[in-house]
Amino acid sequence: MATASSHIYERRLYTSQYHHLPMRLIDLPLDILTLIPEHFESLDDLHAIILTSRALYFANSSPTPSLIRHLATSPHSGIQPYPHLFIAIKARVLADWAVQSAANRKSLHAAIITGGPQGVLDLALSISPLTLEDLTFLRTARLTVLDPAIEILEPMCGNIDDILDPDYETACSNVPLSMVNYWIYCDLFYHTIAAPVLCRAARVRAPVPLSNNTRLKWVYQFLPDCPKRSDVDEEYELLNMRHFLQEGLLEILPKQVVTMPPAYRGVFQRCVNHMGLASLKLVVLYEEDISGAAGAPDEIWALATAIEGLSDAALLEAYTRTGVNDDENEDDKVLDWVSLQADISSFWRVH
Image 1 (cartoon, rainbow, N blue to C red):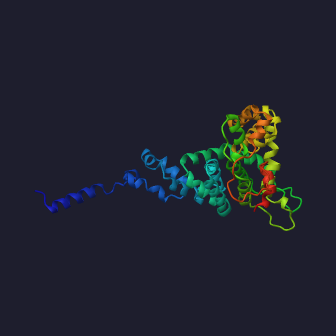
Image 2: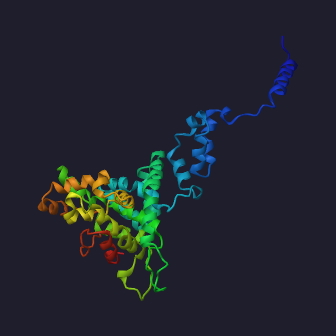
Image 3: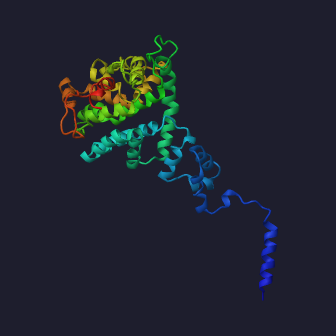
């Protein structure tokens, strides 16, 4: 019969035989392995560990939304501009949610005017948390569209070497931020821009778009590069976005769609100028000497097909505003949507 002392001896013998063998990370229990990413500083750390082995991939390839947000928004991940890029990939989802009810509209309006970009991001992620698929999409968008478009547009609208008057900004000082803000604007106010004609062509009722007031409040909160100088007229404020559009984006887009069937119709060009990532893809194609007619994204062709199938009267009716607005402070003096440039010229009426 084994005694207590014999058990102790056997345990010591076992320990002496194996204590020199190092424990591998994958030898840890699964519940411990799943906790490892909580101590990471960036998405790169998470990406590295799930590529290390099948066991670590199995344990860590489905992180919680809160962990994804923590790592994605960490300064160590280097995703800039923050929080704008994350808002951009959620803007369409946020817009679809906002137009579903008066309460949702008011929540978005309040987030814009009280929380600014961070408040809008918090609202967006409360509705649609970040996923690894979102981050994969963002990475692809940066590599294939955003970064190439920046390289094309920055020399056009961001060159500050030729400034004649040192007291007057004549270039876009932050092309990446202006580009992402443009993307947000296009997707967040999609129901004002392209949705009316697409819904009309599909013979479905278009949602009531977000109000002028909400849109102009967004302009004021997200494009805060006003010089705040008493000697500068209001019409010269928001210079970064003005230069990004006038000397950059709008120098290219009309050339890209001039040979497409509905190019002669003003509403087509107006929408193409505000199609977000699809419009930026046209910029990249331009540098590759590929016309819009030859390589336009599906979203642009869907718009072209819809407009081609509608009469002028139907187009006018599609953009005739009906229903109620999303807040109680709609300024009747503000005109219906024309363009981002027009909104920039009008924003001081409501701030």
